[in-house]
Length: 421
Ligand code: SF4
Image (cartoon, rainbow, N blue to C red):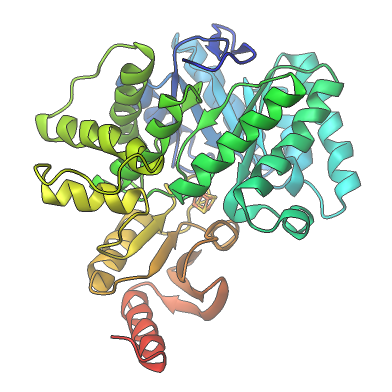
């Protein structure tokens, strides 16, 4: 049974999120926002593939006219897909861009180090959104909860839910209901637990905003697809989730068929045409993943393809047969060839077990978002990479062509010190 949430209307040719409507499929551009032609081309391809909502990064005030130009051009072509601005830190950018887009994604906790100022700026944003008919997504990420909340609740799923509830209460108090919430983690167990706790908290307080569901930094290829399906399907089976993003370290157009499959399977949307192999893989992930996540089973039947069994068991964090890779999908902030870096790091490190390696696109947000990682590989820009061990930078400014081998050497040295292979 679908959880009945508030109904949020996004855009001028509105897409309805929540209130029992069909699951909305969305994605995000990985082009630079000042590359208006490139971003427009990507938006067109996404819409053609079935995207119902598109997010575009807005790193600073200078990008507000760019996203406006992109939205205006799409409208001029008759493409009314809602455009969502992705804001990381700047309250002023959120407030300005809220006047020209359909929805703004923010984590108000990052608006200011002084929490009272962050709250004040969020109040200002609510008023601008009310005036302009703009929706808000409050997007909390496990990897970047901030000191204020981790001091109170640790780095836990409960902390994500509590972090969201503060802003939920402010929206309810202000009687602003055009709100969607997300609590993302690259760890499927934390992500599922966080959403369950948030739903319970919203139910207790009487207002349930719609939920945007996704596994963040899921990586790419089969693993990224399976990890996304295991996390998202577990929640959708429990009726939780009104809009979804399958985040892959690939061309974002590739995200749409996977998300569309999930939307079709769980809310009756049209089933996309998928190659037979992919269909079998997604079906297996959605069949066995939620059962593993709920501990209804401890293994997958032996007749299932052994490769799929291994991948699904790892995605549900029940058995690890290879390194666990976290990789962001990239966005307009990406500072190197992320997909190439991800491939190279995987090739060089596949021999290590019991290890979590993060490959992140930018030095501004990447280090903060790779909470679970033992090692981080982060693009600095200018052809250079930083390597992190447990969130501490151990090598900076390494040329990109040397960086995979330097990472491997560091891992080997560390394992030797610990008496591991
Ligand atoms: S870590 Fe990746 S997805 Fe996140 S802001 Fe940086 S480049 Fe974009």
